[in-house]
Amino acid sequence: MNKNNDFVATADEGLASSARVVKDPSRQRFVVLVANAKGGCGKTTMSTNLASYYAHKGQPVTLLDMDPQQSSNLWLRQRERNGKDDIHGLTLPIDAHFNASKLHAPIRESREYLVIDSPAGLSGPALDALLRIAHVVLVPVLPSPIDIRAATRFLQAIMLSPEYRRRPRRLAVVANRARERTRMYGQLQNFLNSLKIPFLVTLRDTQIYVQATGLGVGVAEIDEPTAKADQNDWRRVAEWLEVQRHLVGALPGFR
Ligand SMILES: Nc1ncnc2c1ncn2[C@@H]1O[C@H](COP(=O)(O)OP(=O)(O)OP(=O)(O)O)[C@@H](O)[C@H]1O
Ligand SMILES: [Mg+2]
Image (cartoon, rainbow, N blue to C red; front, side, top):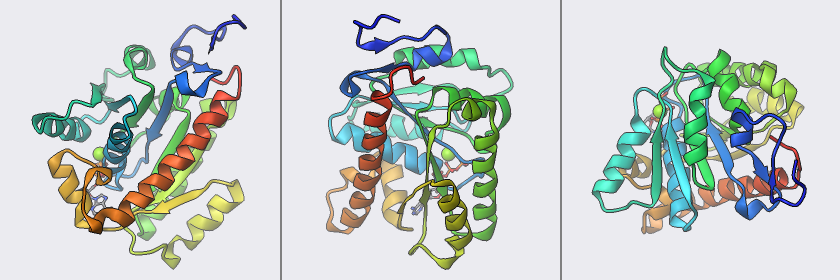
């Protein structure tokens, strides 16, 4: 390791070191994985809104779509058709041919913020490979008993994965499409409290998200009073992520 260098290189020049961390947080690459094995809970909505939040703030951001459905990629194509080219898009569908080494190239090409949209059913070696490169995992959860049980199982799968056991990542849950943080979330809240996992925000169930998706934008970019509450939600998510980014930067050798 070269102590005079801003980059904290590690002995392993493989996958994780390509997501390597630098001492100066303003220069490091920060990888946010949006994941939940459950389908339809809002992974793509979260990924596209987060990427557009960063782009709107003038931050260099890459959106990596790893879902064979390519919903984030389609959103980005729509964005580009509307004249916005401020998000760098990459795709790497997790399919039968996926293996961890395929992550080298997108990590190398990524801008300072990398947001990864992952497919439903993420588990096993693919989950482990993504945990290896992620600094933070955001888990969207819908307010239904089935979704809450599935999210609890997914968080357990993360915490039992070899990569997480080697080095725990910061995890956070986002309640999605909830009118409020209903009692239904009580059991999940207890589980999260016991593990000190934050329940970051409750995203409203609103057509603003559906409209934004169709236009290739995020709620941060919608200049209407009705979007203010939702924009505050994203500010809170981004503030929490920024704290994590600085914490990661303060840990030499973190990878
Ligand atoms: N907060 C919200 N308010 C209203 N609609 C929402 C909200 N979040 C997501 N949706 C809608 O719910 C549907 C599923 O969301 P999304 O595609 O983001 O889920 P996903 O987890 O990526 O699904 P998949 O597992 O199929 O990839 C979409 O039609 C999306 O527009
Ligand atoms: Mg999706």
